[in-house]
Length: 348
Image (tube, rainbow, N blue to C red; front, side):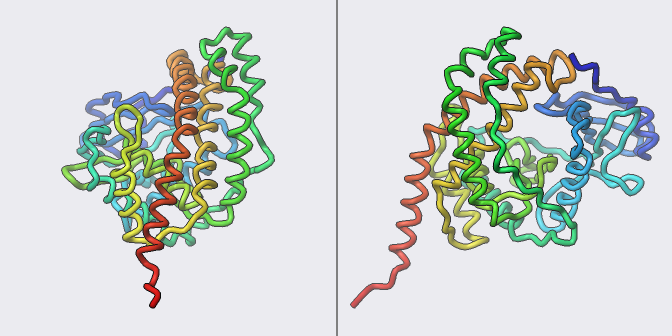
């Protein structure tokens, strides 16, 4: 069991970060990865993100967080975004081995599926198009190539689950062969798409957009980096078009894509490969939560329980995604055919 724990001396943190004298702190969210607090001081109100200490042990963690905030800071000149505050020349701060990020407070809320309209989808699609067109070369962010030879050892987690009598063992066993197949399919698709990459948010879920009236602001840039633009487009369109039951609303899906196309023009892609690549991030999230559930990469009991819950939910989500691919493929290919025939010149 890990002995790493979240800890923060908020009074000392406010003093070192020149935020004023501490007045009040409130936990906003435990989050799926980190903890976020609302912090009031004599100088103002801030959102403080305590970074998961287990994740910060990863060799690339510090570099990734610094780079992601550089991207957010660069893009905030052209899109509505809230990057971390630069304090004493740095985005990432540390007090007593606890890393944290400071953000200016913003009044607003994220939208639930039943609150999202076609207009919302079109707006976020247009913002995503602007991100993909942005010039960020001056940041010198390295595109770390994915190791296409690596496939997750799902049998290892199954055996560890049996040893720990984990509640998800039967579900993992039932889906083991499919997970292996989806993993190999996603790796091949990712290799095919790797020649065309852009810098983007990479996790533009509905929870990562705050709305003040009808004005969106993008938050939580920690996943920002290189990604294939069509992969990013389709994954984000799916986020914004799902209803409360998890079904994809076709009109919202294409409202998002049309918002993107108005900025970046018509799209030509092998949609089957793009959709197959969509397994990769979901499988990565599944593996991370298997590690949390098994105490391989975990900080405390609450996080271990969250990991266990996420394992079951993520396996079911991946199965649903696999079942949905044929429908999405038909939609996307039909949309292309309609556009193609509408644009063809009439023959005399």
